[in-house]
Image 1 (cartoon, one colour):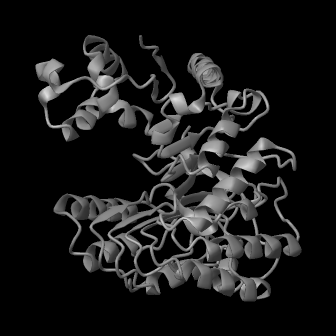
Image 2 (cartoon, helix red, strand yellow):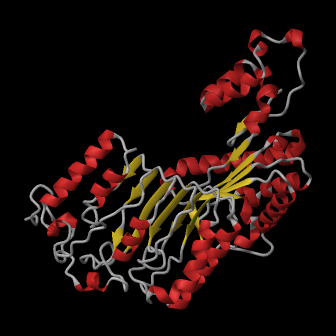
Image 3 (cartoon, one colour):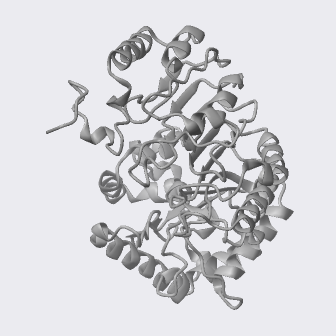
Length: 445
């Protein structure tokens, strides 16, 4: 008799193997095809197939148990029904494990664990019903070979007697002792710099989204910025296997509390840590990253670069000189000081560009004159959103023959339209682009 419950993998007791002569035609397919068939089917079709031919259970068992994904996402209460169902299923898994024992189920086939933002809370079945302890025992006894762990965390409250701490320590020890180290992904909601990174083997991180201090302070003390830079540098210096990195600046920060020179020693060390990420192929940088004139030079092997930072004229000049030798996809939506947050005209603030500080934003014409990057195949921007160098789009098209003809024409047309409008089409005193009629360039009535 079989019992079936679903929570990511199917919870099925392993049946006894049948003799070859008793197998129906469906079971005469090459064995390697079964995982492909089961993987292709949706959950409902998969369940129907297994009901029709229960002999497939033992063939597909390793596949069905390969990934545990509880999908407990407390941040999105709009999906409360899904949230409730998934908690119920994890609870059933815990109950059956207590009744039958972990060895009677398929825990030894688990290769990937995916944890939601609420999975490590006290009310979660993982914690409340001891399922996390079962996982710990399976890893410690070497019955389970973990290849990948994915965290969907936003914040984490550390307690010394917490079973979560026990799990993370066991995972770290497992990662350090095994030649075949698991890949750790923490990307969906991002980890704050206050996260206890010492609980992880940083070299196992393959994908990481990390957020800087989210304090409401618009002008944090310089000491606080220095501390954030040092923590981020330490994390990235250890995460040498990263393939995907996203760093989000402080969304409330509107200005740097000091000239960039006061942060230069720490920023240089941070740049060195980023340069040493030899396996990184995707880099995403957003919001205020310590100072608007701080340009992060991507590692040589980066192929996809997404830039949505708050920048200055000095930043643009450094960007123009950077070769970006292997970047094939560039997405750039830069913001400028006091535009997004204060509703005022951009000031192009930069202590290294006094002429930009003194000029009226509506009259200040800024050109790059040259652009080093010439490897682009995909390019995305929106000059209508924020002010950018006057010749930027022309230079991108001229220097990057790998762009498709449609892309090239799109941005040349955009450049011509942009030049046809007065400068205050984008910045009109205290007005923003939302106050401007895009067809006429005049203030909406």
